[in-house]
Picture 1 (cartoon, rainbow, N blue to C red):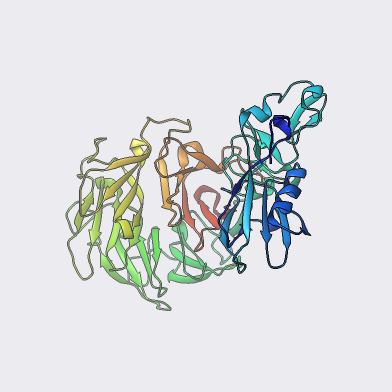
Picture 2 (spheres, helix red, strand yellow):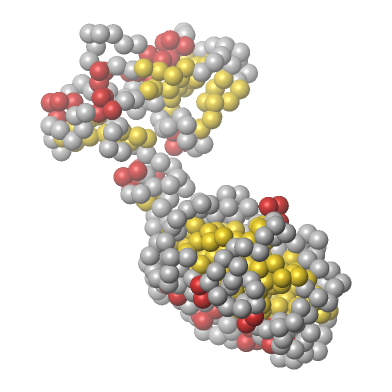
Length: 476
């Protein structure tokens, strides 16, 4: 559909699919322009050519329906099989020559299909932005961005601090446990230094209420918890806890608790009033059967227990019904080599890949170990010295890893923020804190925090320990 006598900024070249396909947009309402009945695929292509906002079209040869869409065919939808064997999808092709006059005076783009006159200069059409070469389709919810011109402002999307397009309201957190004002307490609606959290398969929130020596369970949507471990009084009997920290809940709703001041891991069956010691000697130590202060724990499908022995700078694995552990990370001596750790606090085990992620707190980095393969760790976040730069961490406390896209969420406690590092990235983006959250009392989260993802990874839960509350933040 172009000829030598037609100006370049009036031409349209098309990519055409094979027969038997139609377009499926990721967001029909946001991308759909219009539909008409027309006599042929060629007529449908002409209709798209005549519409400056149309970038994608499809034609059903049985119903003669021609549908027009805006957007990027690669990132904003899929070409899928159609019930009509001769249906096709088309998309416009663009090149930099069509946009040479961008930013120039309006007479230079008069009659152009790709730009329009705004404030006496040639600018991109509605719902597109200039990337330095061509006018690209503006991005949708959750798409990666650098600045807000890339996002669909007609949908109230801006480029959020997490470098994704979305409405500003996404940044606002909701308190889901504890007092919103940060005051402590010992009722079933209050917390006192919530040191650890975990999420059940029913999306219930479990909280290690450290100074209340108990674990509470909050059903999804409820601000009132129920006691599931401990009595609320510190002690070492089998129904008591003393300073619980790390938590893990399995798919049968059995609970594992790091009973930190008793130097043991306790196993509480669902609805049980008593726990059973499954690891630790009950006394602080540095043998293969004892440990010091414990931070995070993780239990794999074989019931192996992984724990951070913070004081002894090592990661221990206890197999079921065994007294002695295997060391799977760290040497027991503080250091910053790839084999060493310095005050490891939290961990996450990616069981399908046998990758163990550890927050190497005093080395200001996240280390990954290939369990069963090597005791050498690989730095996957931070490791560029203590600091607040996007490529740095400052005393990272907790972490969790997405099973969907391998994002690492890190509570960067010394910087009062939660960072997200993409797989293989050299820097992180701020998801929570450091001015990246809107709420009534503060623009910052503070201090030590634990972090977990919801079951479908649509929400991020953050335990703000010193403020005695748990936040939920929407992910996109």
